[in-house]
Image (cartoon, rainbow, N blue to C red):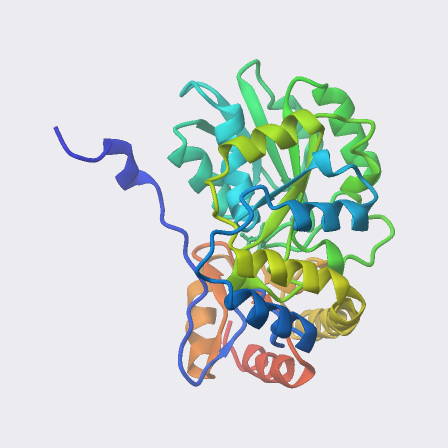
Length: 350
Ligand SMILES: *Cc1c(COP(=O)(O)O)cnc(C)c1O
C-alpha cells in the first residue's frame, strides 16, 4: 500500500514556461505589457481589503461579464483561471473511471492533466495534417461513455481555428447529451471572419460551454481568473464544484477594472495580429513550417528538432516552449523582441 493513489506517477506535471533572468520570455503567451493604470489602481485598492474573505459567489464580476456579453448572469461561472474551469468541467461531468473526456491532440496540455487527475478516461483524435481540429473524426470518436469534449480555438499550441460550419455540424452530430467546451482563451486575438465565435452558438446549444480568460489579452495571468458561459444548469454545476474563495478579491476587482478598460487593453491585440503575420511570413521565408495563427503565438512544426531549436533560442537569451518530438510554440511579442527571435530562427541550423 502506498499513501498516494498509484496512477498519479504516470500523470505528467504541467510544464510552465521557464523564466530565466536576463532572457526574453516567449514561452507562456503572456502580454509583455503590465496591467493598465486603472487596473493597477483597482488591484491596490482591493489589496487593502486583503484581511477579508472575497465574495464567494463572485457576484459583481459575474454581473459585469454577463452585461458585457449580453447574457443572463445565471449563465456565467467564474473560476481561478480557465484551467480551473476545465478541471471543474471534468468534475461536474465524470464520475466513473469509464467516463470519457475527448479532445484533439496536440492541444492544450492542461486537458490530459485535469482529465487524468479526476480519474476519467482520455480519448484523443489527432489534428489534421494542417494542424487543425478534425471535428468530423472527433464526432466519430464519441462513444456512449463520452461526457465532455474539449475544443480549443484558436488551438494552443498550433494557433488554428475551427469554422462556424465545422463547429455547427459537430454540435448537430454530437447532440445534446455531451458537454462540448469551446476554449477561447485567445478569442480577443481572432481577426479571421471564418473563425467560429462560441457566443453566437450557445443559445441554440445548451450543451455548449464557452471558456474565456483574463490571463492573455487582459494581462492578468498572475491573478488567476477565467470564466465559462453556459446554460444556467451547467453554470450552476460549475459553481458548485468550484473551490470556495478560489477567485481572490484582488482578482475579482482587477477583472472588473480590466473589463472597464477593455478598449485600451484590446487595442494592443491589433498590433499583435499585425506582428503575427510578419513573424509567420519571415519564418516561412526562412523555410519553417508554420500554420496560419489566430492567436498571440506561432507554431513551428520542427518534429525531432524541437528541443534543439529551443536550446538554440536559449543561447540567444530567448525562452520558447518546445514540445519534444513535435514542435515549438513561440509567443508573438513586441516588434523588437520578435526581431530578436527571428534573427535566432534564421541562424538555426536545421
Ligand atoms: C492560457 C490558456 C488558458 C488560460 O488559462 P488560465 O488558467 O485562465 O490562465 C486556457 N486555455 C488555453 C488553451 C490557454 O492557452
